[in-house]
Image (cartoon, rainbow, N blue to C red; front, side):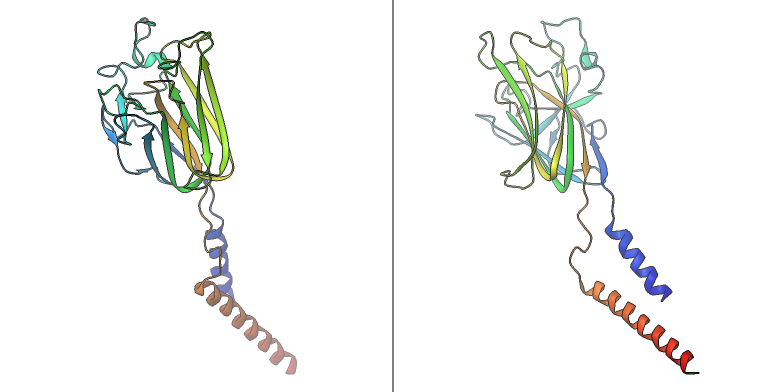
Length: 248
């Protein structure tokens, strides 16, 4: 009986796995101009990142940019007093993700696509240098960065959404940063960060999420039936011993 109880307790513990936090900041194992190809292992999840929407050179790869030379996304003529990572309050560290489709091409993607091997319940990330660039320059023009979570790989079922809008009348300085956080109404396996095609040279960093592990043995398997059988045998043996004692 004691052995059966211990086995049952072990199964209960395995079935009650807690959600785990994942984090990607591109500071370890990355270099300037490196392509991000393949899944990133965060210890609790496998995350794949690709880009889309770049006309003329749609490689689908995303690239790493180093703060400062040779990628000076945060040091431009409109804000010459801000140098390197100071522009984003040191949130970028040494490296961040860029939406330039191929280094040096001046071709930029409009979407990032994040794929998660295991479902997530929330997603947070920083966007750097998001401005109204490349769109209509009339007063009142706006550009919206939208972060959307999907529960399916086909990206048809939305389970969460958040956005940030920059406008030409209240244009943020070069090197600005915004944090986008969205909580899923359920579990998401895909996320899309869409710039709407109205910005270029946007950086992404500090990607954090909560992984929801899949349930363990949600449907009884042969091993579960064995455990139930052992428990039944134990109960029968216990009842027989009780009956023998009563007969004596």
